[in-house]
Length: 191
Image 1 (cartoon, rainbow, N blue to C red):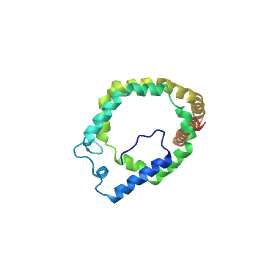
Image 2: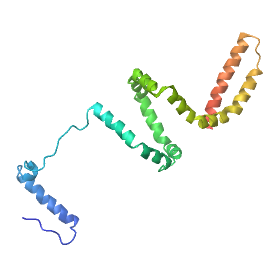
Image 3: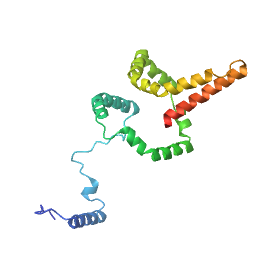
Image 4: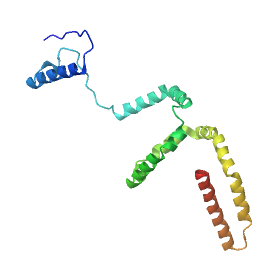
């Protein structure tokens, strides 16, 4: 039966009827042309699901280079505030963290780190690349220092007022400084 061009949009029921009729044809004829294909037509090129690692890495690098401007535009025009979105997902973060702890993901992941490759990457970035990247973070560093300047000065003043006549006194001063710095860090992260 030759297909007839519809004069009106076909309904879901009509689509289902046509599909059921075609399925009956397929079940009745395992050599149906739709199932066998068309050897004289345009053959589909079958290739590996993924490329070899070298080709894959090269394509990734090309994509990074090609899309760098898109990345910059995206950073400047975010779909959402990344900080607020992250805070809203803290429950998911906690669940994934517990799963990571249970699965020992940290140690397993670190065991896969290629130390020589990491050093090679750092050497390629070089001292000037490191200095440039760090320099760009100077405002962030300054803001952090503003947060801790007053509590650090207060802690230092307190420790300097402690006795310093004996080794035990100096041990107490050192311990007080360590504990105080930990408290400042914790307050900065949680306050």
